[in-house]
Amino acid sequence: MIASSTLQCLFVALILFLNAVESNNPKSDQGSVGGCSGVPGIPGSPGHNGLPGRDGLKGDDGMKGAKGDRGDKGVTGKTGPKGSLGQRGSMGPIGIKGEKGIKGSLGQRGEPGPQGENGTANSINWKQCVWKREDGKDTGLIQECVFKKRHSSTALKVAYAANTRVYCLGSSCCGRWYITFNGAECSGPMTIEGVVFLYRTNDSPLRHRQIEGFCKNIPSGSIRVAVHVGNCQGHGSSNRRSGWNSVSRIMIEEYPQSQT
Image (cartoon, rainbow, N blue to C red; front, side, top):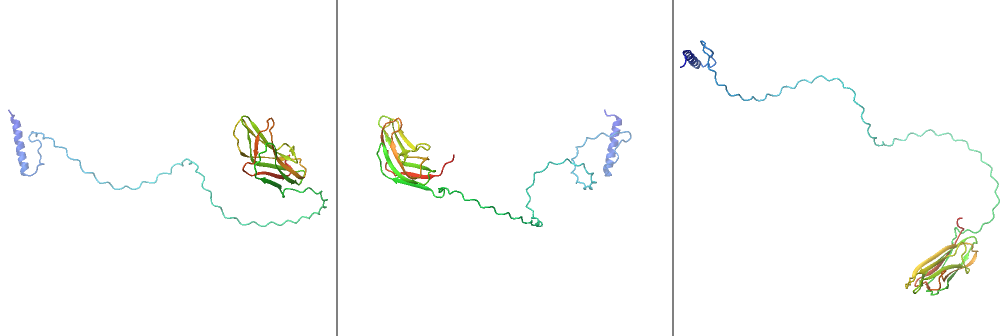
C-alpha cells in the first residue's frame, strides 16, 4: 500500500507538469516541492562528435637564432682538370753581342800517307755459274767456275745449290759434296762441304740442297772454284745423282776481312 506522503508528492508533481505545459516552459523549476523529490529520469544516449574546426591563422616568424659553432674541416677534393695554356709573355730584352775571338793560325799540312789497296765496299766483286743437266757421277768433278779475285787479303764466299740424292739397297749409304779452290779444299779455316746419308732404305729421295761457307788465305788472281762429289768418311761408294730435273749453280763473292 502506497504511503500517503508518496501519493501527495505524485499529485503535486502532476500539477506542476501540467502548469509547465500550459505555460510552454519546460524549464520551470521541477525540483523538490514541499519536501517531495522527483523520480530520476532514464539517462539519455551519448551525442555524436562535432565536426573538426578550421585551421588557425599562421603565427608570426620567430626571432633569428644565434650562430652555431664552426663545423669540422671537410675531406680534400680531387685535383681538378689541367687549365688551358696561358698567353705567351712578352720577349725579354736582347743581350749584348760578345766580341769575336781571335782566329788561330793555320797549322802545317802533313805529308801524304802511303797508297792503300783498292777497296771493295763500293764495288762488290761476285760471279755466278749456272747449268741445267743431270749428272750421275758417283765420284768426281761436277762443275768448275773461274773467278778473278782482286785482293789477297779478302775471303771468298762460295755456295753450291742443286738437287742431290744417294741410293742404297739393304744397307746404309752416304754421299759427300764439297768445294775446291785451284784443286785443293779450303783450309782457312775449314772445308766447305755437305753430306747426304740414308740408313738401310730402298727409298731414293731427290731433294734440293745447298752448301756454302767462307774461305780465307786464297791469293789474288784467277781461282778455279769447283764442286765435287765423293765418299763420306767411313763409308764406301754408293749410287749418287746431282742436278735432277732442275737448275744447279755455283755463287762466288769476294768479302773484306772478317772481325777478329
